[in-house]
Image (cartoon, rainbow, N blue to C red):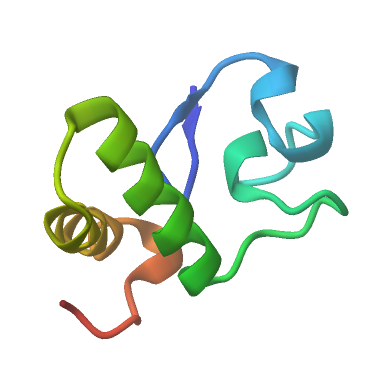
Length: 82
């Protein structure tokens, strides 16, 4: 089983992959409509929103949590930490 390089989501089924393409290293939630991977800022914004909705954190805390999570993922290893 592959994990998304941008968010860490397990990708088990073809529909989990960007554009249903199991050769891609990122999931459908980390891709743009054209199938390319979202930028760091796009992913940070969407992950922050996801954390707010699922964990009820305030925006600043959710943003810090998202940055912390993202620094551990292969796609964002070279991004500056928090």
